[in-house]
Image (cartoon, rainbow, N blue to C red; front, side, top):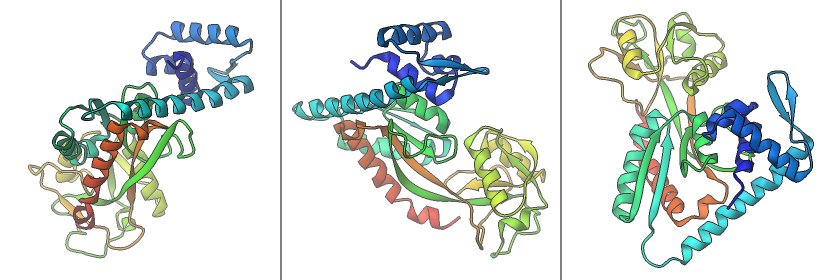
Length: 308
């Protein structure tokens, strides 16, 4: 019942171009542009103005967006109240999206709990990058996103989403079998400033984490290789091509001869993992059940997060 053009405008505000917004909303750029033109004519105001290769929202468009986000949140609350009136078990579908480590270490256990406690729910999981997860939420293609808090995601003040912390995950150092730091229990990240590094591709959340951790420790990492898969990264580390940071919950393939070292002295790099939903959707019975199960699973992680 919410005008889809509001979601297109929201996507343009987030990504800065009609083309990117069209991709998020699964339509052609010409269709997205046409929708913005018809909305502008109906409202009698200009919504977009050129800004180099991008577009900029006019003050009128920002007014529309503020009220549109309020309408979307109210509609989510209305749907939640209607769901609460339906008798019997919680039914329908519940769609999770999550980054790779959480998609392996957290969400499957959450789905298992929900399957037992809410057998009438149809459950789905999609693995995706954190930035893409918010696009899926905004487009109503996902209900709960489990993401790493980075600069690339919307701020917690974004009224379109409700975000809540799940856990803080330390990062360990992955080294080859002959690395000189093996056996030390007081290593710092700075001890690896002279090493070559293996990191994910620029623009990905993990790349941001590595760069922030190393610069926070006072050095810029010498990145020798880029790898977006733990299998490839671990193979390179095992053969002495560099070191890497690895989240504590990430499983490194055992066939590669590597060593996971805990950073013993601060600053200890870590990442914050959060759950996000569309604002208002947290009151839906199915979404609320999903968030509860997610928090329960995360509450069992304390032991794993404390030891490498």
